[in-house]
Image 1 (cartoon, rainbow, N blue to C red):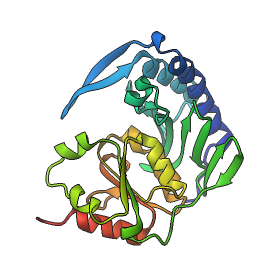
Image 2 (spheres, rainbow, N blue to C red):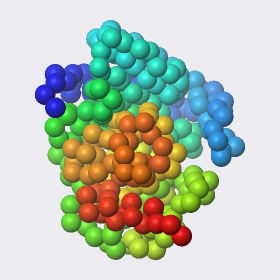
Image 3 (cartoon, rainbow, N blue to C red):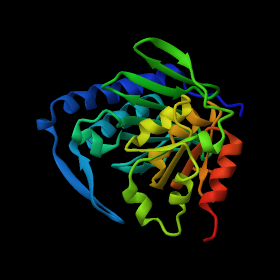
Image 4 (cartoon, helix red, strand yellow):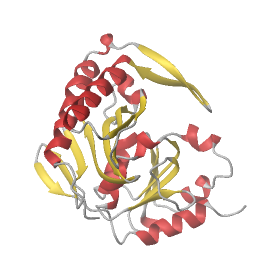
Length: 266
């Protein structure tokens, strides 16, 4: 795709805005006001004043630099622009672990061009980790420096590490074969939120299954995984930008195996 993308420096500048706002409240949760949103199948879906305030800051920063770009965010919906570019942001992906003090939440900032995810960053402010795609490759920056990341390209299903965030979302999904998939992998882990998707891109996890994602939950992560060599689709095998039941795998053969199991008629 031969298009002029924003600079990685701008992407990192947005991440810094989100980090500064969210980290202060994460370290001092007495400043957090919590409410709940309606979400099918869940009794409690938290949202905080920090989610809303951070999204406002990100929207302002994007609009100042790219006033023609559209913006979609979890808290304030879509602002339509005149460009094929659309920013998709989730200031705190993983509000539950954020509230519990567990550093597996992240700030997600993705960029679509003509409805396809082309750039994205996942920042974990407490650890200082950033995972991002510049549109060509995927990278990790942490305390020991910056390295290019790759998924595990040769791992077979029986040696794969499987992740899903919550058994709760698995249980409410109709006709799922997650239990069958669990029996065929090396091990299964839970609770990693967006950080698990980043770990897949970095070659530590091999399969992520998430049954109820919104566009802002996945848009930033798609290019990070794809440009690291992974595959991300819906459970039906379609493009994942609009969310839904999302499957990410370390390589194409593994992805085919996972989809076949999850779509098997019982």
